[in-house]
Image 1 (cartoon, rainbow, N blue to C red):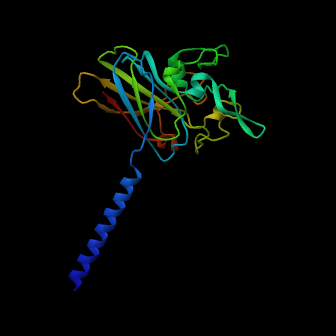
Image 2 (spheres, helix red, strand yellow):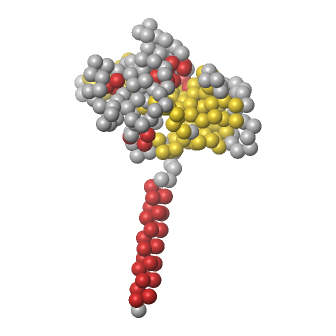
Image 3 (tube, helix red, strand yellow):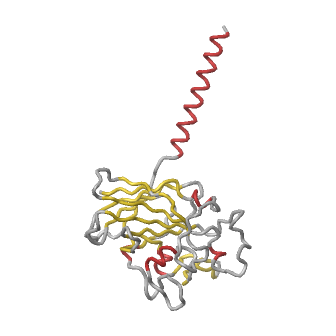
Length: 248
């Protein structure tokens, strides 16, 4: 009788674990929004899968290509608000959101300095008068996505894809609201933008690559430095669950 009871309890425990596992798997199902950029490019075609994490709340992001020496080649996708210098939800007027030209140097500074356009105000950011071309821009994603894109031209056999992402006002115990009280740009960012990267080798048989975090940007965008110590970042590391690059 005791043996039967133990066996019955073991079966219940196994069933409960199996059900919990199925629920976890179901919660992580990938249901992306489909995005498209640079459809007129003449180079290779690729897809970028962003699987969102638990802290994904409308982050700003940029994706671009570099050679293996770190030289900028082209932008793949950048949020329109940064690419055009105009935020759709810029200000409230007459109880309604209105577009407004805004400068956010702390948002995506690593991409901004790589892109290399220095505006009259000294920020490495596009402006309404000098925006990023429409082919490479899109709305700020509100959910996980699958981005289909192409390179402008033929790429070297080995190159690098980088991804920068920033979620405003995500303070933590290290990056506090009063850490740099005189720096207004820092206050729009909190934890600095996080940078991911992956090396692509077209000579390999496999055509799927996983991006990994390699550092964070300057906290207020004053420089284009990459800081490799990620020990002070918390929720910023949970904006994204996984980023997959697929060469088509």
